[in-house]
Length: 318
Image 1 (cartoon, rainbow, N blue to C red):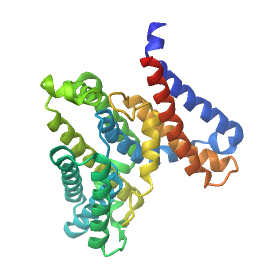
Image 2: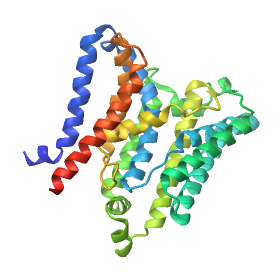
Image 3: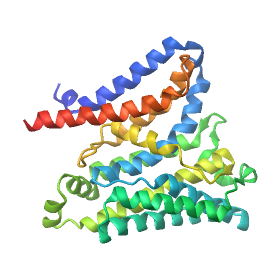
């Protein structure tokens, strides 16, 4: 009973996922009782989930990054241009990861060392990196169909046994790694400590600046990795890449129980939240509603999730 109470939130969000699936199966059995829809989910949800994993650690530490969609764009451009120039997508991958890390480092230095609030700093870098990607590409998309037969394509987004999307396996591996960091490593303790009270954490000897900058770099890396996977899956890069992910990533994180105030968050919750957000659009459309309802649902999820946590926190304090 104590174990059940301890994991009550995880049980709650898992029950929400099961209930939502049950509702969609009832409304549209011809869609949700077929394996194809779940294979489609496993090919699309991991992109947002990877972004949500990186951002979860950052929000737990009390920070924020709104620039990751633009980092996806500029990293994706580096991947596509280097891959085509060298005929080596592996070099393109390293170039993209280096670009994402550099962008994350810039965010970290601006926020941590200069002292600009994260929301302001990352709004600014969002415009900067988006503009950089658009200028470098001259506003044009890049066709990457030649990468479909490469080893990197098969490794990152291929189909295992001609069925299972590889990106879903990579997402699970990275989620497990992040869970180990957050729950079984001293860096995870430092992240939670900083999110709870950065002043106390500093006084206790935690290298708060290094941890926070490291988290921004990690977010840049995750943005770059997600971008490369999207480029390979879609066999193209476009200047507006990443624009549709901002709302759904935040919705998944807050639905998963990560506190907007910092100090609280779970990897399990983020993954489950990503799945729920990922199936919402398909469920809404298959249920006979317009796709325009999806944005309304995402916004409602964010507002309700944050409000519920705020009320719970207020009740706990009183």
